[in-house]
Amino acid sequence: MSSPSPEPKAPSSHLMRVAVAASALLAIAGLAAFWYASNHARQAPPKAADNAVTVTIRGNVCEPNEITVPAGRTTFTIVNQSNRALEWEILDGVMVVEERENIAPGFSQTMTVKLQPGDFAITCGLLSNPRGKLRVTPSAASEAEAARPSLVNYVGALAEYQTFLRLEAGSLEDAVRALADAVQAGDLRQARALYAPAPQPYKRIEPMAELFADLDTRINARADYFEKREADAGFTGFHRIEYALYGQNDLKPLAPVVAQLIADIGVLKERLRGLNMPPERLASSASKLLRRVADNLPAGGEDHYGHAELANLQGSYEGTKKIADLLQPLLVKAAPALQKSLDERFAAFDAALAPYREGEGFKPAPLDEAQRKALAEPVRALAEELAKVNAALGLE
Image (cartoon, rainbow, N blue to C red; front, side, top):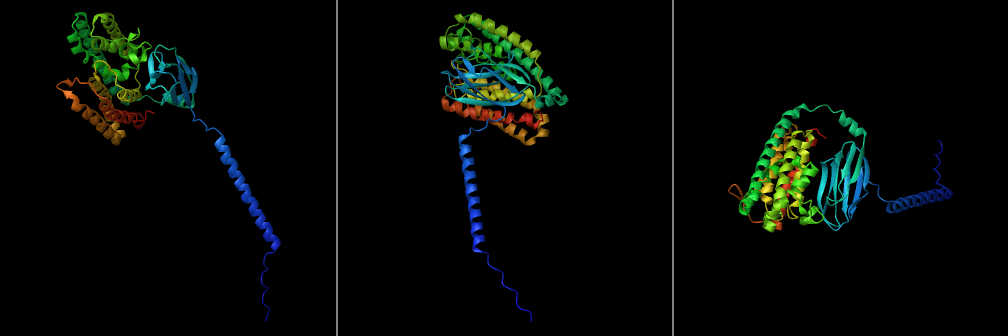
């Protein structure tokens, strides 16, 4: 018989000590690495997101006052360190590219905007402040965008919308001329009766009309955005007329105001006739307008003196609904769920106005803060849904 195999020897105490020491060293090294990484992460400032810019407004200047970004999407954070509520706009000549309003002192707002290469101006708080500069340089994204084929599916919608703009601009001119006649006749009662309906055609075309910054300032800017408020020489247009009718009860100062308003509406008609409208501007302009309306409502709306907020909301509803209806045949095929949601949001907006209706118009009583906040909710929800339309249609 062969002898049994010898039992394997137990590891020597020397090897055991080596293994334990090595394990301890690895543990210490791991803890050291963890401590270093954690400490470094606490000390290192967070990395800023690509194409993110912070603009701080102090006094009457922006810091920085000259900005350069690549074409494509950039997120701007606007910090208000002045003592007045203000707005911040990106302007292409007289055209508004994007804006934020009612930025309260000590607060900030953000906006993400898709920019094409070129040189732009930026407003810095009050409309009378010096403007800053924004330069957008070409990028791979902008070059790909330029190579995109023509979108012939939108020709019909764009042509019909151009007709809508011309008709409403004509109605606006007629309404303002009738208001001017009452002012010139010294008939305060008649002028008040004609005031609330007069801006309604402007509200229906406002998604495009407000693109012309110079005209929108003269036609529709509120006193809040001027240095001397109601006493500022730059305060003109509908709200200057509203202030005289309801705040001063005096028609005497209005003759030059209505004359300038008629002239500005004539210029607006000509500009709308030649307006270049890429299809993506339809939904984006409607969304931007409704977002601004929703932001303004809790702060008191636009009509501080005559309290025609409800009539203005009806005009905004009708103007944005027109755009949505023109895009509906395309959207219902591309994104039926989004189209259904849009229909529901418009219905909610309309339903929110219903309790205030009286005959062909609205009850004259001003809205309180709770009512304005409640109305802002369906408006903001609709703006958010309209903001999704371009992506759903492949326009982004």
